[in-house]
Length: 417
Image (cartoon, rainbow, N blue to C red; front, side, top):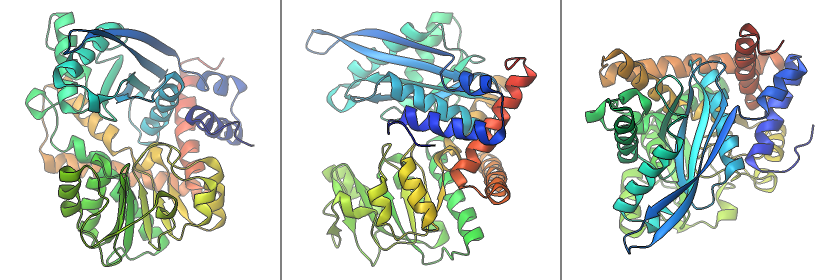
């Protein structure tokens, strides 16, 4: 079944339709899953530092609440649009489902360039967004979290503004908050930790010795850097990384911490001492054992996949591999651990934070890491079993697992009759 277009929404619908057909589900299942339950577009006027008023466009999309409250991050990005937000909300539904979490999927976004805005402008924008979408939010209805160019500080503003509107402190309305406001230690690194646990489990079934294994990280932001850092625990060697400013490559290895320091000082990893520059069209064809895409959607195209030498691709980003590239990599015998599994550490840690907020309890960082590892390993195993038993790719297997759980919930609730 060909994909009609390469936009993330078309890709997400293609994967869901394929899973529904393979599972033999009622036609109404796909009809309900191809569209979000609810999407709100809002205009947010913000008083800028120069005294002018600028109106920003924002969205909040709830894809499915079959398994529980909608859950998903909020991104600030100049290129975001309604269809992208809908696609990411759909991914969140199946990401939570694959992990066995009692959440549905949601996503929010504001079209803005946070790099060109002051902290006061960003705070005013965030609070305006919360006021505009407040009717959708709530600890038992829709719980936001950090995503691209948002962080714990932004989540603190969201919690505060929502609490002001409700007249009471509502910690559980958002996750990824500062620890002082009910957040959990390690939430900001949980996505990367989950990704590297998937690297470990995939390497085990493929017979790859991670001690001394080489890897490349595309995108050296929060997820990319932390994934590189945790890969060091396995004795693996980062030989390449890149960001929007360029790439750095050294067969002898790159120290992730030193590269991050360089990036903070100069704004890019390119030019790191002892490394050579890597053009974007050559990055994924470097001779490495493992590639961790941690940047934007659609990074690995069919043409790029043809030149890849890696044995394993583990997706820390949402939608980095287009369907045509998936087919090429499958034919080459490259295992791709898909985003809805490999990048699900963040939503899993968010679940822990949400539970603690609702219960008024707290767990130690050691307990949280043990719980995260247990869920990631179990989820990888369930997807790998489906991959092996159904003789499908790991991505198809993940969607089969995720779609089946959501469809079962819809059927039990009477939504498919």
